[in-house]
Image (cartoon, rainbow, N blue to C red; front, side):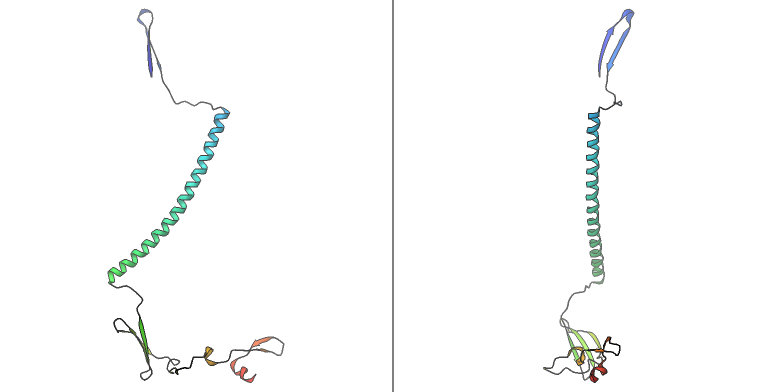
Length: 160
């Protein structure tokens, strides 16, 4: 701001100051076009940044979800003092006692003991492989009286 003083008659003093103020100014067509381009650039850049934020937020949510699951797993392991791991085992079918036992190889502890099922009670013969479908023949198609094709049942297959 600048000041200037001027002496007038009979001791009148006039003081003039210059300053800048923010006032509305009508824009020229050229200035208005430039502002429109700036506005368009602003909108485009804002949308790009919002898209990036949405993508990063989705990735961050996914990362956070994984971290929380890992934390829950670690809390459980720390609380129990145990964790689930792959352990080598052996399974014994005792046909005399009619039971199946599974042992951990690292501790020789029995981890499963149950009665053999009817299908498991028959010992496997050395050198003989199990037949697919329990040794039964696969179902064959047969023609019915009306000409339609149907699947034959096991007793019907033997008759065919």
